[in-house]
Length: 120
Image 1 (cartoon, rainbow, N blue to C red):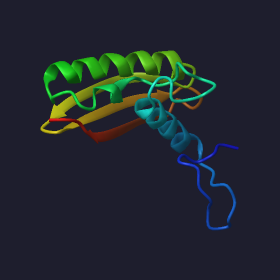
Image 2 (image 1 turned 180 degrees about the vertical axis):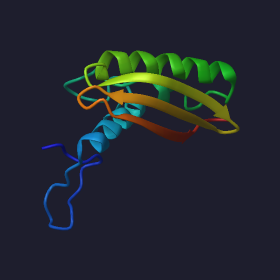
Image 3 (image 1 turned 180 degrees about the horizontal axis):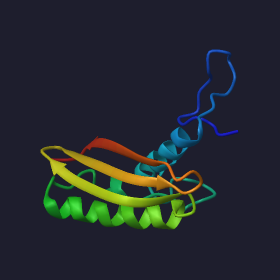
């Protein structure tokens, strides 16, 4: 059973489940926005990207976030996905993170984009 993130109940009042591709997308989201040290039993889990939330939006911040994300994806999800492309852009007061990847178990390609506000 693959649980839905964030944890909630479905219309039947049971634990919501996610299908394979949606579960992988949710794993990526968890990795991107979890701070290292935030999880009790996995203190090294997370990308560290949100540590830069108060940094000014700049190409340097975008490059740093891209480096952190690539490292996190390789360390924690390389058994599930192969990253085909990763882009991080600092646009005004937000970071736009785009990831193209292949789900290793099925060979299915997918793309996901996340946006987060960052400090000015």
